[in-house]
Image 1 (cartoon, one colour):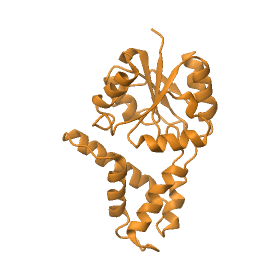
Image 2: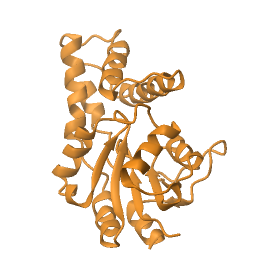
Image 3: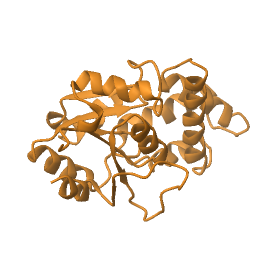
Image 4: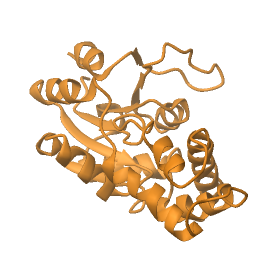
Length: 221
């Protein structure tokens, strides 16, 4: 059966997180802490999910950022530094392939939704600024699912909201762990590999391995 719904991850899949490094340097911290911090946020969110707990992305991100910045000589109070870095999410832009890819997917009659471990508000701001909000029927967050991706319950929540079976949906992400989680939940999957890297063998291989959203639209077509 052909796919009916495309479920897109947001952070790093749609948004380019590279500018967050500048937010770190703004407050006196090295830019290389940005990816380390973001990976730690995901780790802590996953850890809470494993033990049956949950917390909003912003809470986990802020608390872990205080830990990361703890030994740094900042140019302002730590709370102000945390606010400055976190506010950078609302100023992020899209990867270059996203706009055309989204328009192509929508033009082909596919229903588009987002599913993020972050807040729906971040996705809203990102897509509104890019002029793409109209192409998405819903912007979903795991905050309403009660568990972070890649727990099965997060994908089940999205399927229920969309009113489709798992085999009628394609989860699209740059994160292999997200692809694997969706595959284990029965969804079809697409891995967006913009860097030409290899997919980890310990995860379930994606149904589609593409270099951009434009390419994904061609594959699904």
